[in-house]
Length: 321
Image (tube, rainbow, N blue to C red; front, side):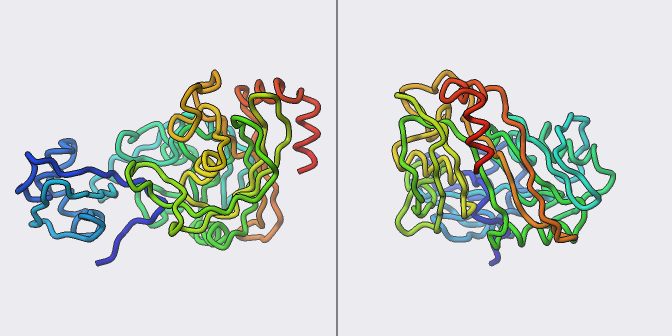
């Protein structure tokens, strides 16, 4: 059976309790997620979006206590009908008839998902564009990549089907040169982090460095530092889920403010992870013209940059990257 989701999706994980043992899996999921119908979960099961201990199941399957269920919520036509345009202001960096690039603020979710059905970039995109590339997922029209909710910075969407297909190719073939800025704990060394990433074996909503995971490579350069923190420039060469955040934790210099992978003792006085998608370089998907797009730096990150190196010195460092 074909699984209709990718490793870049964020599935839900749950373990069967003693009280749930003997209950059909479609009924069990309906009881766990009462906002969704039994028919909806049967649809997910039939399309391979529900796994039991890592394997596809049938709706009549009866799990046992301790079994792990993995659910990847997907759109169905009924869900798509509720996807409405919303007049949410967008800070546009670049736009033509083929694509749109914005500076995503922290706190904005890229596309609708359980718990975030409104107020997303997709809702704003539908209001901004009269027509948008449908893509393969009805809840993600125009989406070719995404940023975590609390990561700010440059986010691109396709306005036409041709641009959508080509942009996805550029990302998958690593022809998008990405530069992120972050404030991390400690002082790392300039290096290339080559550490495979996969789902955490215990905390299933998290990612972790796993020896048999998927290849993940991030280039790191220190731009400024003091006795507590550093401004780092990060160039991910692959696009794994939470890659930069996991890699920075792995080398012992987690990103300040990260609620999952950050310093356990302190958030560094910030309310979100200090990670910003600063620049994206690529050839235009239709015309082939080289594009170099930069997202203005948010105020919380600017404050830390001034603490570490002063505004003028930081500007010089970024200009030389």
